[in-house]
Image 1: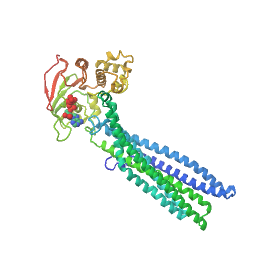
Image 2: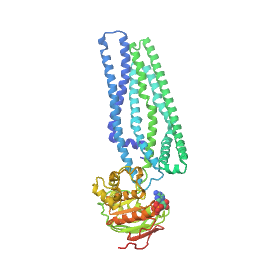
Image 3: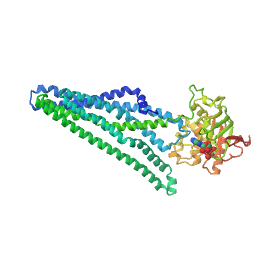
Image 4: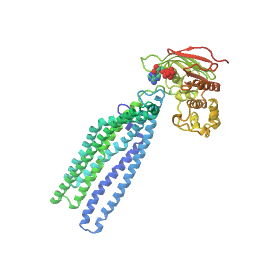
Amino acid sequence: MRGRPLVALLAAARPVAHRFAASALCGVLAAGSAIALMGVSGYLISRAALRPEIVTLAVAITAVRALSLSRAVFRYAERVVSHDASLRLLRELRVRWFRRLEPLVPAGLPDARSGDLLSGFAADVEAVQHLYLRGLAPPLVALTAGAGTVAAVAWALPAGGLWLALGLLPAALVLPAATIALTRAAASRRAGALAARNAETVELLHGAPELVAFGRAGDQLARIAAADAVLSRIARRDARTAGFTTAATILLTAGTTLAVLVCGVHAVHRGALPGVLLAALALAAPAAFEAVRPLPEAARDLLTAHGAAARLGALTAHAPPAADPPRPLPAPRGDLLRLRGVRARYAPGSPWVLDGVDLDLRPGRRVALLGPSGSGKSTLAHLLVRFRDPDGGRITLDGRDLREYAQDDVRRAICLVDQHAHLFATTIRANVALAKPGAAEHEIVGALRRARAWDWIRTLPDGLDTHVGEHGARVSGGQRQRIALARAFLSGARIVVLDEPTAHLDPGTARDLLRDVLDGASGTGILLITHTPPPPGTVDQVLHLEAGRLRAAGEHRAS
Ligand SMILES: Nc1ncnc2c1ncn2[C@@H]1O[C@H](COP(=O)(O)OP(=O)(O)OP(=O)(O)O)[C@@H](O)[C@H]1O
């Protein structure tokens, strides 16, 4: 959706175009009913003032009743149909953008902070609905209802029609154009300012303990206030523009109505217009302005939708670091994972992070991978689960290139437990069952046993239904890692990659956890990524990652 974002958005609306067309038709009929209601009412009042036979008013009375009903019914139908269409489309767009975003996230989105991403993505997807709801329907309704009223007034009184056209045109064209000119700069800054304010707020919430501990909460609050001040300035500017266009529309309405009235009075005096039509024309004119009144705001909404669509397009335009093949192979069993001459780097021309890595891993084998910080251990882990693909060399699973399988199938065979494994703010049961929705209790308990977490969980008053708190705040670092490991075991993956499972743990707990996990993982291939050597006898092989290559460091396992 880059380049011409609004055109792309319009194309995306094709499946619900008939619904939008129906809602626009209802809008036109509602506006037409409202204008006709005012005109016929004016006529009825004038005729009634002459005290004619009541039967001569019957048609006008019925028309007033019918128009007041049809105005309400069409307005209601227009709202229901347009919102229904808009929500259907939003659902499609959300899924479409999320699908594009999803493969980019595990390897890290360039230049995105989570607060920015969260607020920006959600707000922008919401904003594009303005394109359809407020950016497209109102101009269509205004054009049709305005032209229809001008034609009807001109039919009765050509000069009146001319005045009405002269009043409606600036309200329909000049004021929206002025709105765009006055708010364009602010509109392009609004989303960025909102995202920046939200990102600073998320930073405050995430970093609260450190900010308070180091007495820096005030600085962060000042940054939020500064970001908020930018937003306030933009909002004030928007409000001034809206005030100006509203006042200008009111002046144009009053001036045009007066001009039509004066014209009409002259025409009545000359005998060119029946007196009973004077009120009808004078009331129809301001009613026609009701149809063009939303246009300046529609112009602003179009700008907002344009900016939102452009940002969403740019955000999701990055090529995914890994993609599914057109015809994936059947899911692999995960009998042998083999790396030969694997190379990887993060940008063309930058130094190789991995530069010729060879490795074999099969179920039942435990390999420890050591290396200094920044040596590329996590990069290697990400290659194994296809968060990204290697830039050179080959990774095969059961003899076929990893790229020939669907990514989900690879991740079912090879499971990564990240060093920052995320626990969701729900129960232990739900956190573990994430790996296998609908898993039976005995399977969950079995996985927790293998992760050596069950002895602790069974002592808890709520057992498996214990809530872990936000980001697992109510469990210790070691307990969190064990829950994450149980998840990996429950997944049934035959090869598990553990990236720093003992990070942040004291040496004693780290040793216990490693011993428990490695002993409990029989039959599973384990690649243990760590800074510190594993306890003696727990792994089959220890490899060192240095200068982008693996070097064997000896056999540690007793058996
Ligand atoms: N998304 C990224 N974009 C650019 N460079 C990256 C990215 N991720 C990692 N790097 C760089 O690649 C190198 C290897 O990083 P990696 O995280 O794989 O190291 P590591 O051995 O896992 O480190 P640690 O033990 O500290 O976790 C580092 O120099 C790092 O700066």
